[in-house]
Image 1: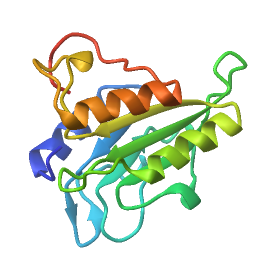
Image 2: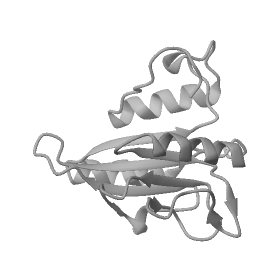
Image 3: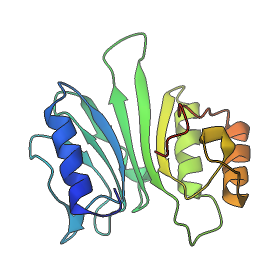
Length: 165
């Protein structure tokens, strides 16, 4: 979203056209410590204070924040899907700052939490990493680090096509 007003407005427009939704947001538009342009009927899960990530969902969905795992760069929620097929799912919205070389330890903690509870996990991440695995024309050092970490944690990339996300 690049911390911009038009990006948040676009998310609002998309949400208004959907019956149910979950958005994993990185760098939402924030003013005065609050995520702006979002409808009050929506669930917004984010860290307090300086926010760089959030999870936005339709109010009818059962999402709960997992505050013990959240930081300004990681929003984490437990989604009770209400179905035996999907069960409970951990949702993570992560921002990996381009100025920080090491992979965010807090995201590894969230993955370990999901695995220890036998929950599925879905992660939306602004990784500032490039890899042919997710459609970039070339793989850089961060991309290689992220590829190796995903493999070691047993995670898969779900991007389709080569359009940047």
